[in-house]
Amino acid sequence: NNAGRYLVIEGTLILTDFELLFFPHQSKTQLEGTYSEIYIIERKIDRTNIIIDIQYKSFKRWILIFNNEAVALSLLKDVTDRKNRLSYCNNNVLAFTYRMGFDVVEDGWKRFDLEKEYERLFFPIDDRNMFWKKSLANAQYKVCSSYPRVLYIPQNVPDESLIKGASFRDENRIPVFSWVHPKSLASISRAAQPLTGPLGRRNSVDENLVSSIWYSNPTPSTNMILDCRPYKNALANLAKGAGFENREFYQNCAIEFCGIENIHEMKNSWEKLRRIMFSIPAQNEVDTSWFSKIESTGWLKHIQDVMRGAVKISEEIQNGVSVMVHCSHGWDRTAQLVSLSQILLDDYYRTLRGFEDLIEKEWLSFGHKFSDRCSDITPLG
Image (cartoon, rainbow, N blue to C red; front, side, top):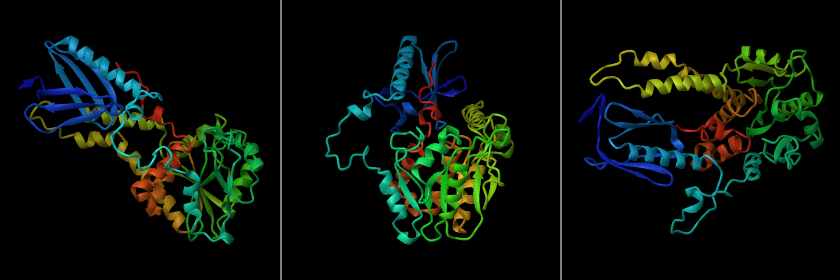
């Protein structure tokens, strides 16, 4: 049957504690969508029916048609309540209440150990070439509240200097170790933008820390500061009291800009892409401009810029060049580039467990704003 421009499939809808299930009456194929995937849920009314439109972050779309308003409103309330329940850290969600009838082989909450992962990275390196050390300066988060308790820094950098130099980086996110090549000893480090400002402020502790990172690489080469942002954006940040490094003071390195747009541009592009993906042409209508519409969103260009940045890092590391990566705050574009480059460089991160460790190490441990970026606490309506 047809209802306007929609092909109607009758079936049974089931709400569990963590997902929606739809069972078509004329098919054995089951449809499912978790509440955490939902981006927008809206009520719409046509001349005869109540419509609940559910749009998922993964570009799935369910259009549920009801002829009973009370049932539709009840569904809207129940889905919204379950979605919001998953948006906050409490013990009422399924992961904390449901118990399967099997023995727990491994406690997932305790599986990842940041120090053991760093030990894995340093294991192939001879003690004579070990230029990094563990620092507990952030054990009480006195250096940076969005960094892990355990940091790895160059051997010749005293812990006390981290606190002194932290205020020169946005959100106190100082340059620290991420990954090292087992043979060339070229390293990937990460940070946030320096707070140079329009007057070109300097910080000797920060300059010495970056210099020490370069000297941890015994390969005689010009190292690199890779700024994820477009140059014009970094330049504009100078007027706001932030900015980027001056090569006159950060020596023995090149400074390059990746041109990756900020989170707001990404979100705008994604919204354009979502609207195109969710647009429904009339039946039997062919949209001949669909590919040009996709291109006009800029989304594929953003993906290309991120991939180019990751390839750039991996190529420099392979050539013995150490790379320090930062954007503005160092928790979005920086996390993308250091993670993708490590997937290219380290085959362990291309395994299931390794990928889990990589997300723990570069995203969770270094303060990526998952709740904010995933819209998990956006009110529904």
